[in-house]
Image (cartoon, rainbow, N blue to C red):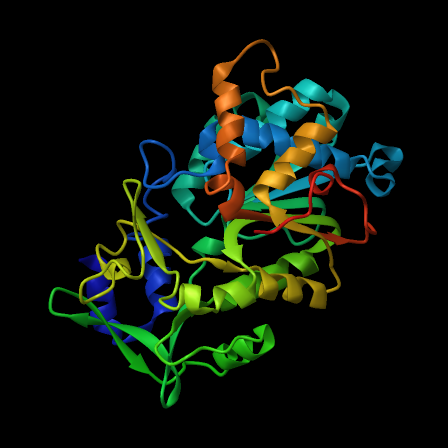
Length: 376
């Protein structure tokens, strides 16, 4: 009830403001109240929850990036920044793989963990354990400047979005207000002209009755990250679509979704008030990423797109290009099953996309882009 009371005090708020409260309020927010939300005991499942293999494969790509002449000269330090790092599980998997495969590369790494949740940040030292010697910083904001690679796994889909609806009278925005003991939605004029401008830049035309989410925060974030990157790469893994597919009849109800105890409630699931208004602060909220707009915003800041492809093909490039044996260390059925889960079409393999952007590194032929540059 705490989030409901906060909205009652404030009056109607945008969906973005509601999500900020429900997810990130320092006392009542979903992410603020626990160090880890994914996995079997959590509410949803990510590639990191499959086991250490995902991080081990990412380490192959990161090591290849660090071996480029721009970074390898004089055995220079190499920053690995993880945004939305949680308790540090993915970073720990990457570091342990680096230490095992190439100690000289491991010794070059400066790790920066970026995480909004104080509870998750507090858990990072114990998660990192013996590889904690590489941790250079941990905080809520990106480093002022870094040179290396920024990894963001399922970060952009968790940023607060505005929701709009097209009506016969033009574009309207969806707002959230307190109604009795719960919450309800209402429509009003757009809170900012940036919403229509976003759709115009994306070439999106909504039909009457269509709902859509607009992630202005994602554009702010990618611009900020691009400016802080002095040289290197942004490696983003998330689920989403190109704008032409996201803003189409196939997603006319919008994509704002909840996850609780591994049960998804999409935009069509609510009877009356949408499902994403229920139990604020107690369930995850997420919306699909518009990769067209994220990519364009990064390119406007001077970055170059090196690859945009399904996670399946990105990981296949790493497996095939590096000659990885998923059963490294002996027959291991668990690792083989983990790889299958990461690659499976219709699951993590095709729902998750990988966007690789570069700055000051040219257009290197990376292993992750060597198998097939395909986006489904």
